[in-house]
Figure 1: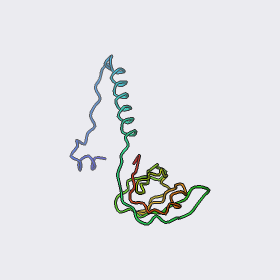
Figure 2: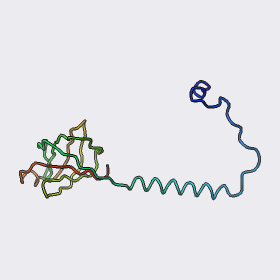
Figure 3: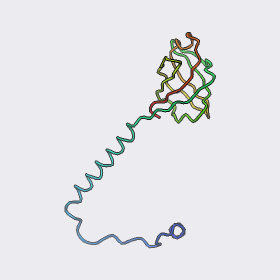
Figure 4: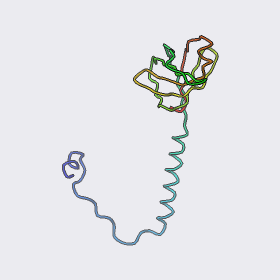
Amino acid sequence: MRRLAEAAGLPAVEPVPPTGPVPSGWAEVAAGAARALRDELKTVTNRRTQSDVPLSGGDEAGAAGRRTLMRFEAQGELGVAEGSPATLIVKELAIEVEVVSVFGNVVTSRCLRELLRRGRRPCGWTCRGC
């Protein structure tokens, strides 16, 4: 531990905690700090970002009922996690999909079979919740 502290330029001795009673307002200060951290976490986790990433491919990778698995190759950084909702933009049509898997720049999503019936190739990907 001493070597790590010296490498980081920190004193090798631990500080001695102050002696004496704890200030009377410590509980309110701690509660306020906890509230501020909880609010910050809520703000960060509720924030949604959007980014458009051009796709190529759009090959059918499987089907289940009215849903189809589509595999695309992204031409940029997706920044999306598996299980995330996303919107696939096909010309003027926006189709809600679920990201099933991401492997490198290949993304597989689950969407309604109507996309295939229309015979259009996707021209963009808008990721929500990334």
